[in-house]
Length: 35
Image 1 (cartoon, helix red, strand yellow):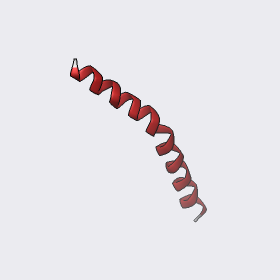
Image 2: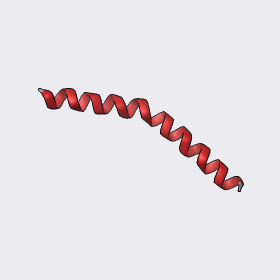
Image 3: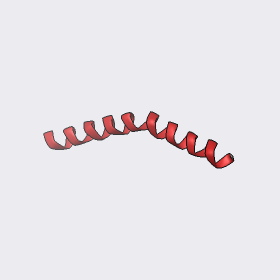
Image 4: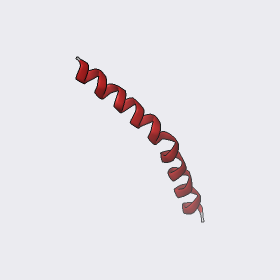
């Protein structure tokens, strides 16, 4: 069952990181557009 705990860890990591990545990408896109 190690693969299951690994998958759970990956999913949780993605859920935690996704908003941060989306926010930074949004900020970068806005900065580039303004420039």
